Length: 193
Image (cartoon, rainbow, N blue to C red; front, side, top):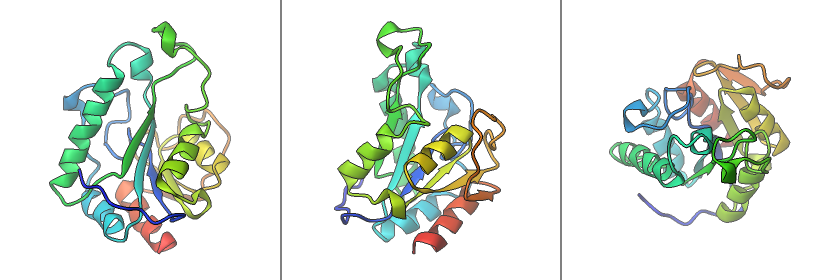
């Protein structure tokens, strides 16, 4: 994985994982379920080359259900990183919430501030990576992604892949709606450059 210095208070691209970075939008806990969304590696590389952080923020209730450990989720993220690296691209940092209010595993059963639509992980990413959230864009496939982005003061893009916003869990409108992740990244590049 490449490491680089990120300029303070830069714009960033924040992606959801399931249904956005990867094609599968259902709960994901196995290597065989990982398939990058089409045509995204060259687009991510464009942000990498411009020193614009690309961040993944994702809820992972599979940990709370006991289907995979936190270490296992990190290993899946390393696999995704390696696949992007083969195409000259990388994610600056992966953040995930392992909690769920109805978790099977007691230590993960809680109302936390990191599970989207709450914005704890957005704030953490901004602090750790020196990102100005108000200059950044969040891309997701669920209403919780859009609401979290709005609460964190980002511009938001809903992709019609994955859940395509049809979860209808929250009443919220994205700033933009596009066909897929590749289109979302192209639009993001135009907006923040």
